[in-house]
Length: 478
Ligand code: BGP
Image: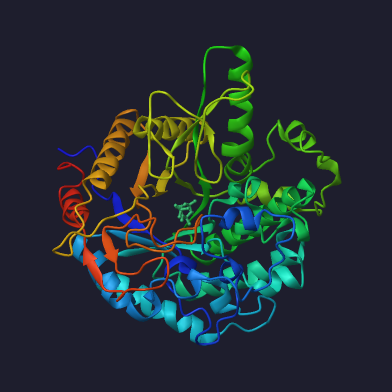
């Protein structure tokens, strides 16, 4: 008998800006993602002093083309169907629906695309899981209003969320309001539209942007539940299991603080409905007075009464805290690097591979919040090699995913309630941190390189048949 519940949502995950392409078609406006350059130094550029949301002719913008999913979505969804996906997590591009973000009427052509995408999923028996905002927002909202630090964005997001919820609520049950909302503590450009030149220099703006996003998210929850009580709306956080390097109490306390400020701050507000006890300490350590934030009358009550139904989270790696050494040995990581863990191996990008860390994450999250969990991202970014027969034998990816699925099985035995598992980038797509194609996660190979050469043909990797079997046996045959 499988450990996994009968209705477990096996699937895969993507985001509009990283695969659709067609960045200027059918009335779509420019989005912040369209301004993110390709190359390993993408995050350095986005967090540099002079980045100012202007297109630069000397750079390549891989998100403009993505993997041309906009034109090939039928083929892609059919492949997901062939793997037996029970669900597919994708995001709607805000800039397709409201090209400028502040207009009153949505762009019907943009909605038509998602009408078709959703119907295609349903045709293959795949439950759509929608992220309303995944590292993508109309550029105009950043240029004209200064991004999420401006409270007016709440109204624009509310209008957008209401349009898509109303249009799709009979077809889409599972929603998430913001992808990796806590990622702003490291790269606020991605989800808040904030770079140093428009506010990210001052942490007050990041904290204010979060508050505005919390309110916007709560309004979406409120609207969704009133519209259709069946709808399940989740928050979505990036979770990095964090260990103290040793039993030194100083390291242990630093680890608690890191967990609070990175892993839990946003979820505490969105799941528990109120700012946590450590809020003032956290913000004052960043030079911000909580009482200086603009919090309108009614905001706190709204947050309290419109908490999310589940926690969606991404999990790729764990981190180690050591504040006692001046120059500890460091490694790379998702948004941030960290101290090397001597017990773990690393991916090609230096991310520390830690399946047991996923079980720990699940235990921590479930026992802290007591709401169902949905693992909506996990996976191994790797340099895949196509052999002479055009095949990618990605045994390393299979082994990464197998180990993590086994860890989920152990967490189920720990009593954790998990709704589903959607590995990231189920089809190769543009990387969020490097803007490159060569960091691949997919079960499906896409013939496109970092310079934009390739046929864009899709082909099945070894992991494709493996994952198909995993789903068919409900996680028994790994
Ligand atoms: C998450 C993001 C995704 C994504 C993934 C992998 O943080 O939600 O958008 O791309 O990480 O990261 P990367 O593409 O940088 O390897």
